[in-house]
Image 1 (cartoon, rainbow, N blue to C red):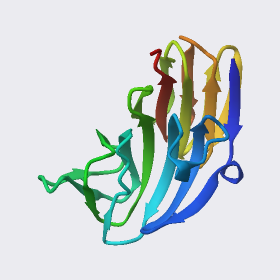
Image 2: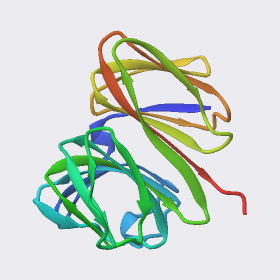
Image 3: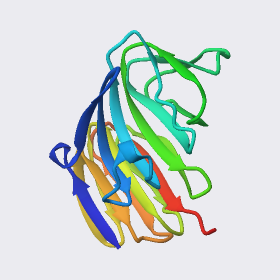
Image 4: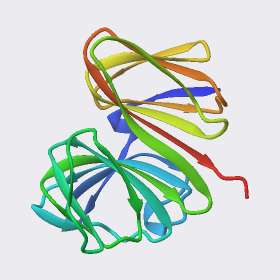
Length: 195
């Protein structure tokens, strides 16, 4: 099992048409987002425009949440839906997606037919929360607010706001997030499908 603390200096930040995007992790590790050949990618982006269009990613399935600010979304000209901080929404990356509202978001992208995964928010007012990792793949816990200790397989790492704990090769392990203060973590899991 590998368990790594990632700090903001470990992330890769680039610009997109509506703000900046910060890549937290990508698989394989040497993949380049712009080449669109990655298996999965985790990122957080700022949306600095009142209205923007999402980059079409027809080969990817997406999960998105906001960390700060509300976002209104419409797919393919359909009804608007509102995402408030830590709401999670799942959609097809090939959809024609338009958004309204300045915010900071959190994204999980999964290659269709080759990867699967999930994204959820863990909110703690103190105490602990435990869950099991998938049978294969990775788990990344991004600390959006506060701070907490993350335990897995006898290892312990402390993460503060803006930091992440990446857990790999921990099939079916129990992960426990322990917070002495209020904290919010985004918990993402991704794994390669056996085809």
